[in-house]
Amino acid sequence: MTYSLDFRRHVLSVREKEGLTFAETATRFSVGVASLTRWAKSPEPKATREGRPRKVDLEKLAQDVRDHPDAYQYERAARFQVTPKAIWNGLRALGVTYEKIADAPEVGRSRAASPPREDCARSE
Image (cartoon, rainbow, N blue to C red; front, side, top):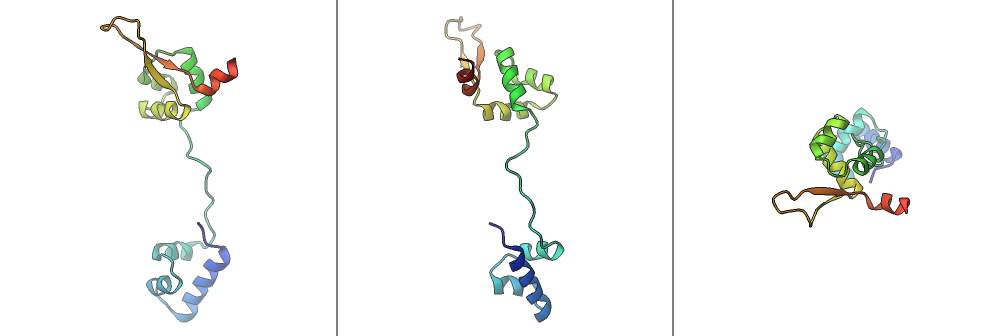
């Protein structure tokens, strides 16, 4: 929750008029000292983002999963020129899971990626 610009300016003007410290002003108005110091630099509230920016385009990653279902994450990371952790985060956001191939011999058992559920529903 952000405080309104009017409230911020009011608090700062009271602090200046009465010569209060940040701690005294924070106690009087029940706000944090860190908030007051930020407001003193710039009283306007900061714009917020809707979500974290992604290093990997999720549409391209989903297409890569369809094209290369048995690729390792480090191979995908090399194709996208990012870290394997970024690929892991992208696959997690897409809901991609890896399944063991049951009919393969136990020694040579491999894994294949299941494409995102949304993409499967669209292609039908």
